[in-house]
Length: 536
Image 1: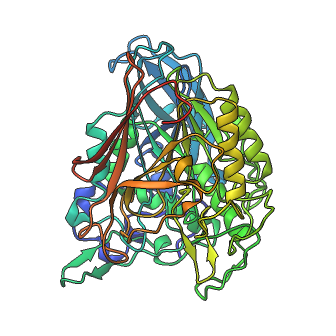
Image 2: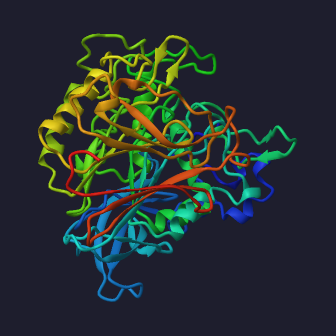
């Protein structure tokens, strides 16, 4: 494995299966272990730029260099960069895999911000590489501005990676052309437990070809391998172009570490030499914090310690991102604080899937929110029965349609709080199950009745295998007016559509419209919700 000081790779380390067709993807040609003659040049940022957790006046800019460099960001109102404002960022190096963040504050609200990142030689600031540019919109402070965002998840799963014959991750281009204000990634940004093979034979005999790398030739165990897994997706030019235009709100789920993992688990998986998921998840969280602009995980926002290979576990994924008066996004973490997967029949379960502290935080912040709409970004669905083996369950539901048990108790407490505190405008968005559907929950159909009706929308995957529909658990009274799923497991993106969801909020009426779309942009299902209601 090429595990140099930065865990990077150059074109030399791309496996042979990626050679044909890779030029069309405009792959980066970086190597962290750069030869002496390359180090004598100027820093390069060929992995593109990203912006995350944008608010009315702030955002986080991300970049990756090919060598130690000072990060400098310039912002302006126009592409000409007249009267540009400069932001002096950190010196980035191997301790963060040559990634860096610069926090922007005091930006004008509701405006298109143009920015460019320059990487300078730390010893000679006059020596800078080619600037890499991007743009994003800050959230408005007024309620009259329309808002659009997309959500989905599940990228490079089940061995379906960047296929140059299909043009790579082309769903990102579909979303980019719709010009959303931001993209909510609901988890499974990588599949650390799914290597990317050079080729796969489809049921009809066609060959699926993947761009591959050394880090993605095996499951991720070391910090370098987790870094390589996150870096893999940035080989796709659609994704890099999307990142340069659309800011992100990012959460994680199981495949950032291992399928269906929970704290304290010891893996029964012969592919692994390190079987302790606490060790693996700490390494993954560190790489995750390096590769996404998330304010609660970085040093300038309360940050993750990098004092050891595994990291100290500081920082957190769960947070609320306030996107002006129309919208607050409550990003959950249903991984790091959950109890062990089980049959889920406990009559008392204070830890549940969120942990007691995260549940207190969520109830408190929902009650404080003044936004018209409160999107609860859940990395797992509520009423779909997601099994883990023959007897255990992976999500909230456990197949018993009666009174809440196990993790359902925590969700019942949350839903009761939303009702009794008269919290309006809650909508649940999730991914995880590799198909798209809409669920409406209502007390008149439910065993537990102390809540107001609400909607949950599912959309995904972005580029992973499709799976059959799951059954519904009746505890919270779900009905399913729409579902689209394949009829067999692990259908490739060449056989089954990939999906993303779109949310539009009308600045005049405040109405929120959810559209479930498939690759190419076709609308499969649409639902309009009215503002100001404790239930829909």
